[in-house]
Image (tube, rainbow, N blue to C red; front, side, top):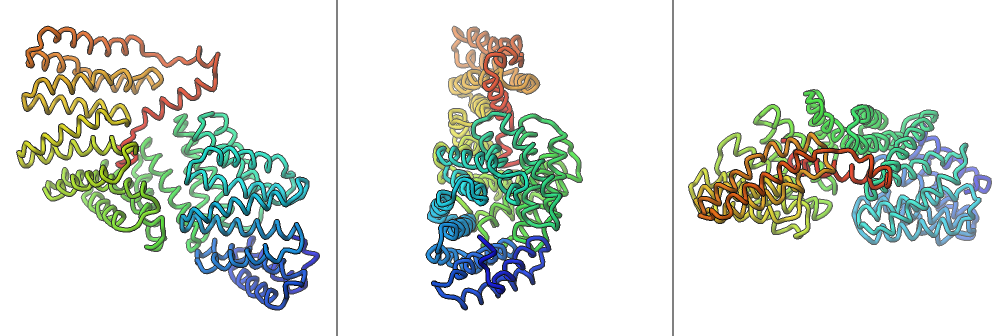
Length: 582
């Protein structure tokens, strides 16, 4: 966009819009929008200034939408963007109009989750880049925005082709962006984000390390800019999330502490009435919660709860992320309840999750997640209060999860595991053997369902234990045998030594229980063989506990990195996805 072609009134509107980006003075933005509207009304399609007036108006409306979240501003910006594309009298004006239109459509997709918006956003952003010469100053910015649109579509729909195209565009944009370009912050930020996304899906730790360093460079560039804004907050927040991701895979506490400070800086960088404020609060709550897992510092968990509560309060009830925010608050409350056993925390967690499951959530997967959480919370409240009705509700909700979730959903196996123990507690309270039969059935199904192996072993052991209590010896042998068979997978050599030792300690009696049940089932001929087989699994693990991947790293360093990452994933408490630390 060439400011030399602007009439005086439009130049004033543009200057006020740019001034708002520095001062965050809303009066400047409102005036810019008013003046730009006057310029549009005062010109015709044949006027060279008409297209420029539309572009300035679209940009200013998008900024006000980002600042306050009023959907009317976003809708107007998209309509104005379409008009700017139609009115474009030059290739430069066409690219500018397509760029602004693509941004508006991407924002609306994030608000409404309509597939058509993100598809059109990708199309418009790609057309903007294709209409621009590769040596044009605007070309890196247009490539960067195309990359963001492709990443957004990949995050929601999962097409690997979108990820590959997003990375290619982001890398090219970063390479082409001059050191002194005002758009360098944008292009570098996008490239860093793409590297982090590729790490999550491809597992090369070098991508994550580079992403963190790029994030630090962007923070340094942003520090030289005047004023504070949501874009500055986003830069700090992105750095914090990448540090948090690296902490998850390396366990480096310095990364976790830096992530907390980055998240706090992001929150401080935007006014409380800015719609993006809740996003940065949510990231801070997550980071504090993760640090609490390590430090058990009451200040961290109290801060996580207070911050998560502020997120809920800051979102209107009809916002698509409102239900997810309530589920996140419930996780923080349940985590604190585990430590303090404060009744108010578990009661509020149940209340929040009931509310979350009663409203439309952003996706079916989020609803399944919230329902699974609710079942766990109800079970915990029952254990604390002894109210039998809570158990019945916990069972009903868990069964609803299993009805709603696809068979391959990652929460199916964990929910079956949890439902089995909930039914077993119901049996203890009622002595209804049909409920115990149901519990044993769920334990059996959980042990056979793809999920974290530790839960499958736990479910198989419960299948054996409860069958033995009912003197169903053959079924008990089957359950214990399933548990022993799973042990090598649960304590595989790619996981950390301490984790394997703890797991094997927890399950050291499985082989003896298996042999005892075989004797009771009058399978004397195979009891000794089962005992030797079960103990052999344990001893083979104990005698071969080693984590040295030096030989693998020498031949295939990328494979060694991937093995370490997979090992950490297997060691992570998958139940955390629905309960937090127990």
